[in-house]
Length: 236
Length: 138
Image 1 (tube, each protein chain N blue to C red):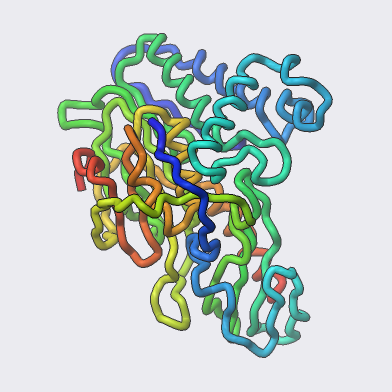
Image 2 (image 1 turned 90 degrees about the vertical axis):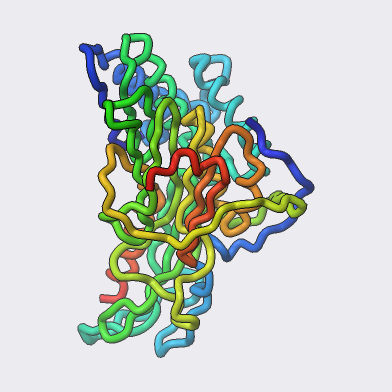
């Protein structure tokens, strides 16, 4: 997957190796950068789905369901070739979290390149504080969410360097800078964030219909749009 | 768990982040052809001016390609030529839904946090394409 995944366990001596071993296995099986991975060979038609690990079928079945749910905005063939990476990361991280729980971890966070899963409360002073990255100022956050037993995923295309303004209006262009989705399952949250971001400004209609998941959209007009249920997570 | 499905309607594609209003920059002295990857000849002088189109950078969600407008060696505008999902497909948006989203002005905070959620993937492709556009401007 080519991305850093960090696991932080608070309290207790917990073996994190099974979780990392699982993530390495997923990488070997689903890497589209490795020509010999099952997903690469399946994509080229060298092997059939029946020849693959059952997890490959599981992932592709789930991708197909998400494609339906998002009106085609979530697709495993967006780039032309078979590439379920959009789901694999969240799916793998969700299962890694389950492995950590099996190993006895009660309070931990898994951070996969900005998509996070948290369990428990890290201290007496409250839940995990998850910052929503400010899309235009790298060192700042746009909001802080107090999270406990929940997953948060963000999709966006951030512009780096100086502020980019529409030369015709002198204002940022219309559209979305980022979409953050919060809910019980990291794979679903990640896929929803990806799809909603691809919808652009119209994502506001779609996220309002989500059930069990909350959304925060940051528009390039510097407006933050949140589903009402997000309020109970907002710290600042 | 599921979003309500509605009949398919077409959605304007030029509203993705950062590209609204940028697809057709004002004509400059050396315009590039939008989306055609046609790049003007590199100016001989150091301080480049003009419009430069970056390389098409593939991501897991689709391609990212940007265009950079420079004046006297400084970037004055950056816009998207292509972003993931920037292709025709049947789409749906519930037009009937009257979402009650809360709205506030984007604030920049320096609050203490344990974790950060934010995109990392498309932004890297964006940066790569910007860099290649700048290389062409040299």
